[in-house]
Length: 211
Image 1 (cartoon, one colour):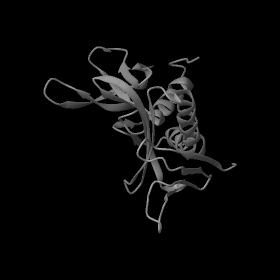
Image 2 (cartoon, rainbow, N blue to C red):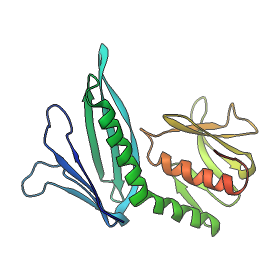
Image 3 (cartoon, helix red, strand yellow):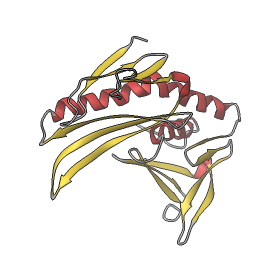
Image 4 (tube, rainbow, N blue to C red):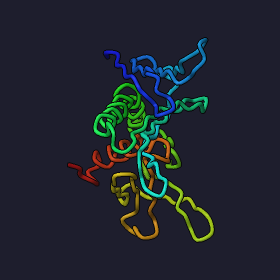
């Protein structure tokens, strides 16, 4: 896969052009200021989680947005890729850059992670994405009760999903009002991975159909 590069200006107080590199073997970002070590590098095999979203910049009125992308490795170290638009300046250009970076994270690193999970399911192995545990018979997830959370099992034939702009929801068709859980793309690690894995399984079972 061909190497891809971006040059990012993070904001008003950090106007340096910082290089972001997508390589089939590693991810590299010039996120430091030390002359001896400018870059954070994650090898592909180390990468395990990501999340992304837009933080609105406000002071009485909204005057900007910060595009935020976080990648985490198996040692729980986090690589932050952020950049800002103020008063709508370069909003279209920066939003396109943001979307392309998320797409490249998917293509270079997380597509393989998703395929590994699908293969594990097909082989009858159990695994967990976030707080959702997958088995051949069901999924289990934490549902908020009145006083605490409780873990609920949902048989595959009763699992349903709905996708929104900022979050992804899983619920039971038997009791959608009480048995449901939302996962936010910005706040919760690997919501996109969860979305892809669970919907692939549901589609293969012909439980849900997607456009």
